[in-house]
Length: 461
Image 1: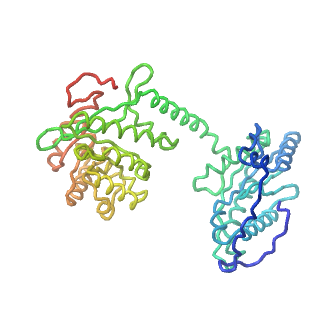
Image 2 (image 1 turned 135 degrees about the vertical axis):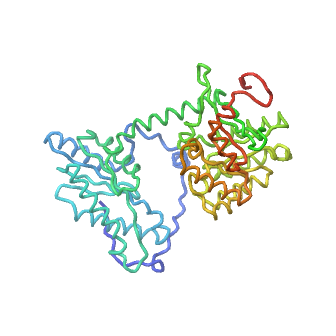
Image 3 (image 1 turned 90 degrees about the vertical axis):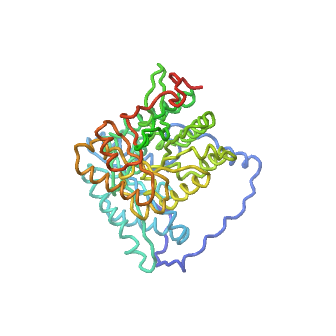
């Protein structure tokens, strides 16, 4: 609990006191060294939480084990506390936390405890509380948080947001540090719900381990130069000629078997590896264009890369004084990138075109791009999502939808590409629909060599 009482006063932006500057402190040499190089945090547990709260929690856990009952640890995080501090200052934020603690105390029973643990986090220990009881109390706390500004600060535009996570003991944990960790995981796993228990996140543990394992596998392949490119042709509908090739990422395992790395891209995005992957693909593609001056190549970039100015600077540096290479480079962005941030994606597209590259909008139709979005992006071509192409011969709804997409895109003067063309029948339908070009297994699977050189299996450099 807070160790001081704060006066309850109505606040407004005008009346909130400005933050006071911290007094300058001169550190003696030993203290200065300690500040710059703090001692390592002991393991396990560390000093993340007040020791007296950890000791009390441990005592409560052992008590319910002895008495064959149940209890819960609940963590309440005020997720927009930085916003409150920015708007009203330190003193107001402290009043908010103080008053919220008092309100929660009023909901609890004798023996239950609420205490401030960190800057924006409260810890609540519930004795003789089963999961269903904890859920009821969590609902009441959530309702209090939602109505806090309206009920307490009538003259201020103050609103607080909270996330609540809990863990039951001894059902889910038999130790204080483990309980705090699991409640912390529950808070961080919230996806729209006001309260989440650790039991609900247990099923995600295997997935987390798997994702980290896959990320390690991908990074190791990168370090060992076992990532390379395969090339699939894009065919002009009227002539049957190859317009360009799409460069697709492939992974070579320890036994030398080559497989698609596409399934690992979401993992690379989530684990922070997509920057090095997209940079590597860009470098390899430009290297191929420099090697062969009569081929055009395309490659796909992640949505995250469209928001990365460093990647764009890197590309600009590599294409500097090479207009012939830029003119033969097509960069594909997914339609969902436009829905993330249309203005930023439009800037990314314009920057690529200023370098002399062409830009394709991949998976066209999956996100139902609007007239305004397509006009703002000003891409050079669109690639219709293969999910609408594969069963074109048997699905009348998809035929109607694809024809609508083609008319929509061609109305903007855009080059159209149909993906996943796997049969001659589908290719014939698309030609009758006047699609500009096609890509798929019917015309060629991705080749692990450079098809334009008619060489053998590409082993890489």
